[in-house]
Amino acid sequence: MRRLPWLLLPFGVLAADYTSKVWILKLLHFQGDSKPVIEGFFSLTLGFNKGAIFGTLHSAPEWLRISLFLLAGIAALIYFGRLFLAEETPKLERVALGLILGGACGNGLDRILHGYVVDFFDFAFGEWHYWYFNIADSCIVVGAILFGITLLTAKKAREIAPAE
Image (cartoon, rainbow, N blue to C red; front, top):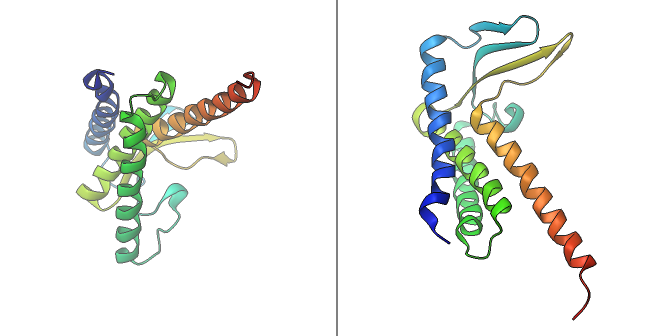
């Protein structure tokens, strides 16, 4: 496996996420500032998430949040990074892992630079309103879905394959 072309994927995700956050912080200045893109459905709304997914842990003591995020981040980088760079990792699985790694690094960089994650994609439909999110979050979710699919299809292939 030639690693350099594959490393472009997580670094590309990180660059796109970082660039989008720099742009949104120039466009919107205060938490809650919003610019409608599709009225009543999609807005760019600035949010700062000190917690984890969907804002969990946002009210936990700062030392606890920092410790948990640091440990989880290092563990994720080691685990997913090892899989990502392994010679035997199939291409689709490597794409999934690259998306996860790039997204995790994007949100991790936010925590280092700001102490929180910058979110800005804001979707609503009638009374339903989704949590704010960003490019890193999107890549992590898409990567996790792809990773799950690769694990399920690999298991299915092993079940179907004739015993040797």
